Amino acid sequence: MKNKIEELLNEIETFAAESSESVEEFRIKILSKKGKVTELFAEFKSVAPEMRKEVGEMLNELKNKAQEKVNALKEKFKYKEDGGKSSLDLTLPAELVAMGSRHPLSIVRNQIVDIFSRIGFTISDGPEIEDDWHNFTALNTPADHPARDMQDTFYLSENPDIVLRTQTSSVQVHVMENTKPPIRTISPGRVYRNEAISARAHCQFHQVEGLYIDKGVSFADLKQALLYFSKEMFGEETKIRLRPSFFPFTEISAEMDISCPFCKGNGCNICKGAGWVEILGCGLVDPAVLENCKIDSKIYSGFAFGMGIERITMLKYQVKDLRLFFENDMRFLKQFNAVI
Ligand code: DAH
Image 1 (cartoon, protein in one colour):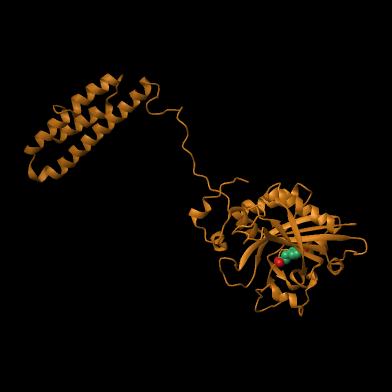
Image 2: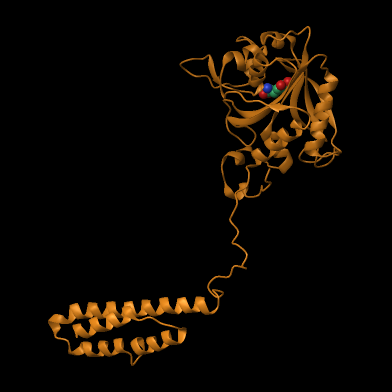
C-alpha cells in the first residue's frame, strides 16, 4: 500500500500537461470517483490497524498534493488560453484609497495665511514656551499691569518667568527684535490660557497675529487690509465696523466686527439679532512697543491685529461647541474635506 502511494505521488509530481484538456484527463484519472486516489482510499479498509495512522497520513497528503497540482495546472492554462483576462482585468478602475481630510482649524488657518500672503505678508513663527518679556513686558504689559488679568496664564512653578504663551502677539516681539522694517508678517500658532473648558472657552486654542511696520503706516492702512481680509474670507458683500477698545500694545486700539455672514446684517440667532459679529482685535502699534524692540518710533509706525482661528472657523462652519475641535471625533472631522 505504501509503495502504491509513493508511486502515485511520483506520477503526480512528474506529470506535465500540454493543455487544459490534458489537465482535465489527469484530474479524472487521479481524483474522480473512479480515480487512482479514490481507489487507494477504498483499499485503506484492508490496512492493518497498526499501520492505519501512518498510511492514513500518507493518503491525505497524496490527495492534497494531487488537488494542488490540478489547481495549479488549471490556473496556468486558464491564464494562457484567455490571455490572462479572467484572472486579471487591467481595465477595471482602481479601488479608491480612503483619504483623510484636513482638520477644520487647519483649513481655516491655511485660508487666512493664503489671503494675507496675497498682499505680501510673510509667515513667522515663535516658541509656545515663552519668557515673560516676549509674552507681556515688551508688549507694554509690565508685571503690575492690570491688563495681565485679561489672560489667565499658565506659569512654570519653578520659574515664573517662563509661561505658555497666552497670545501670538509674542511673535511680534521676536520678529521686531530680529528684522529691520519694513515688516509685513502674520504668525499663526497655538496659545494657552488657564480657563475652564466649556463650549465657548478652552485652555488651548489658536490665533493669527498680523504685523505691519513701515514709514507712515496709518489706521487707514489697517482698515483697508482688514476689509480686504474680511471680504476674501466671508464674501464680497461683507462690511466691517471698528469699535474703540483697549489693548496694552496698541494705541489706538479697536475691535472689529463683520456684518453677520448668515443674515447679511439683518439679525439672526448667530449674531444674536445684532447683525454684526466680532472677529478680531487690532490697532496701531504703541510707540513704546516699537522702542522695546529697538525700532525708532519717530521714523516707523505700524499696525497689528490678532484673531482666534477657532472663532473664525466656528463662524464659517456654524460649529456651536469649541470642544469639538479637540476631541478627534471622526463623525465631526469627516465633514471637512477641503484639500488646501
Ligand atoms: N493678543 C490679543 C489677544 O489675545 C489679540 C490682539 C488684539 C492682537 C489687538 C493684536 C492687536 O495684535 O493689535 O486678545
